[in-house]
Image 1: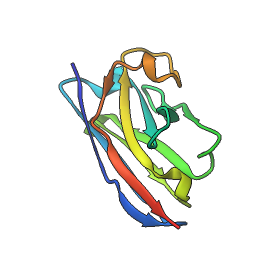
Image 2: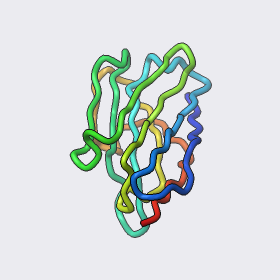
Image 3: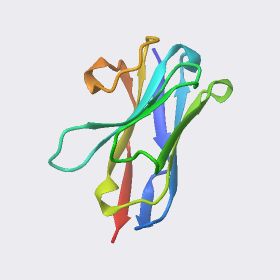
Length: 124
């Protein structure tokens, strides 16, 4: 069973950048499709980005396309989410998730393991 720990959240002004990290332990990261999701108060958890096991394929929600970049370093058992040009509507708790499959999905319920989340707040 893999354990996931997110870090890198914080408070940033509109237009700023943050880099989130998700460190995995207890498993081989290369066996998992990885995703980033977010949840704002009063809203459902939503897909942000996902990456295939090798890192060769990436997928993004329309709302973050061109601003966010997902990447992974399987040797370091870490997944990243680089967030640029941040907007107040990006404010949420960000979660990384792992799916023991080769098939990438954007549906939260199809991910097997979740981190505890990291808060991102973008001030206007």
